[in-house]
Image (cartoon, rainbow, N blue to C red; front, side):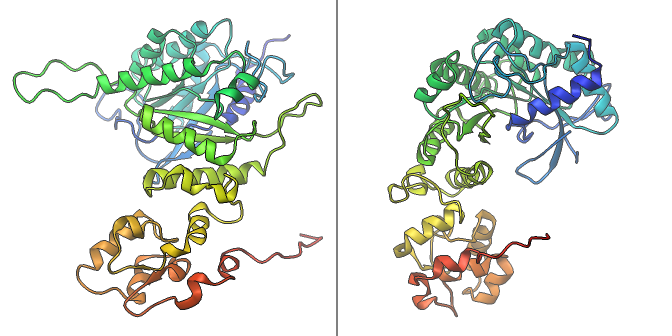
Length: 416
C-alpha cells in the first residue's frame, strides 16, 4: 500500500473520530500563555465544535491516532472485520498537527482517541506520549482530552491524567449482557475498575489541606476537567429506562462530568442480527434531555421513562412535558407559593427561570406580565401554573392538551 500524505491521513482519521461523542471541554483549569513561554490556552472562543455548559463554543481537533483495531466490536465501524479505509498517525504527526492548527487559530484543543493496535498498553503509551510531548516538550497550555483504554495498565492511565485535562473511559453499552454479546473482547468489570481508578486519582489530587499545621505539598492536578463516558444507544435492545438507570449509577459511582449518548447508525451488513433501531438521532436527543432532567431538575430515572410508557421516551414531545402530561394531578403549581423543586417540574421553567421567580416573589405577588418578562416559554407553562391573575381552569385536564404542543401534520411539497 502506498504511503499516505498527512492530509490524506487527516481526512480518514478525522472522519473516523466522528463516532466519539464526548468532546465538550468544560470544567478544566483556566490556563493561557500570556506573559509565559508556551503555546495555547483553554479559554476564549474557538475541526469539531462543542459547546460548554456556560455557552462557550470550543473548537477541537478531533481525531483518532489510528482506526486500525484488533477488537471486533460489532457496533463499531472501525472493528477489525470492517472493510473501511485505514490510516495511522505517528506521535510526531499528531503533535505537529495540533500545534499547527492552534497557531492558525483553527482550534483551542485536542480530542484524541484511537483504535487498539498491537495491545491496549502499546496504544495507551502512544496516546500518553502525544500529551506528554505537547505539555512538556512544547509547553502547550491548551485543552487535551484523551480517550483512555480500560484494558491498559492503570499506571498508564494515571500517567495520562498528569497531562490531559479530561479523561474518558467508554462504558460502551448499557448492560453487561449486551457488552458480552456485541463486544466480547471487552469486560464490564474492567471498564468500571478503570473508571473507579480515574475517580480515585482525581479525588486524591483535589483533597483539601488540613486546617492546622503546614499543609503537605499537593501533587499535580489529575485530569482537572474530570472524566466522562460514552454509551452507544440503539445497538442493542435496551429500553430507555435501562439506559437512564445505568447513567444514574455512573454519575453516582464515578462522579462523572457527563454521560454522552451516541446514536447507533446501522452499518450495512447483510449478516448482521443487530436489532432494528428507533429514529437514532431523535432518540439520542431525548436521552440528552432526560439526562439533563436527572442532573439538574431532581427527577429519578424511573419516573422519566416509567412503566406506563413501556420504559421508552416519547419521541414527539420532550420528556419533561411528557412527565407533566402523565402526572396532571401534580398541577397546577402556584408560582407564588411553590417550592423550588415544584417549580422545576413546570414545563417551560428552567433553573434560571425558577431562580428569578423565587427572587421576584419576595417583593410582589407575581402576575402573568411579571412571568412573561422572566420566562420566554410562558405560553408552554400556562396550563400548569396559577398566578395572582391567572388560573388554567379545565385546561390542565383537557383531552387536547397534548395536541397543543405537537405540530399538526402537513403535506410535504413535491418541489421543496
